[in-house]
Length: 284
Image (cartoon, rainbow, N blue to C red; front, side, top):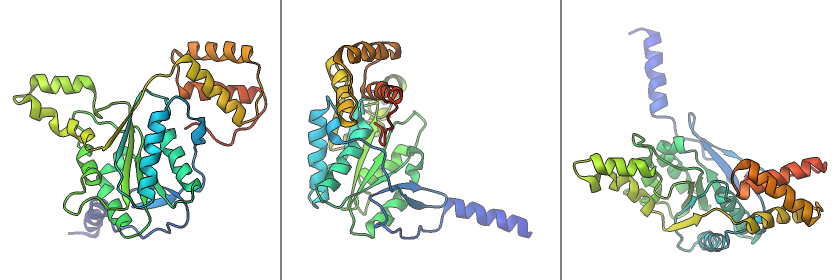
């Protein structure tokens, strides 16, 4: 066998069985992003988020997730959480804002963002986190699976933990537009075409059941939409008369065909730009 063939074999083995990641400096930041090939945690010195008080219309979800996260940061039992529902209603913003609030209260807590496509590497990440006393939120944004997607099996390592169990210092938060993490039409198609309909989808659908907290996010009312914008204006010191705000904000959401926290932030960004005011944070 020639040298070129040996090099190709070695590279293939390295891709399939990467070397263990070096133990990161967890004191470098309160937030990290998990990367693979090679494995590693990249510190994020400045997290893109808004203050918890600016998230309007999600009071119940806000209070529930904050209490769960405070329990976890104090070393008490806490649940994995699935934030599901309408697009642009602050699901990912809430996770990041809650993390900031816990830090503000003086409790040490790290957050690690994991991409959906990197879920197969989650076992290696858990091995890394298990070795430290720090406490971690693993955060996966916009989580969903298609009919031929096997990534959901990797997620069970976080939710169930396998033979070792989930590390005591790790909790998993995910956001999704789908309550069961898979399209409704796919669930119905598999049930109608399978020999054993209940078994055909039970494994995937039951994945969402492994989250102890289900927090639903629904379209906001017009009053909530306007209150979001007023909150952004107050926080950034932008003055605008109520008549102008109402007219411009309603026209803005009409041209978008929807009304949500994201649309409210987009209008406010436009308003700030027209006023020549720089923004240090965004709604995410």
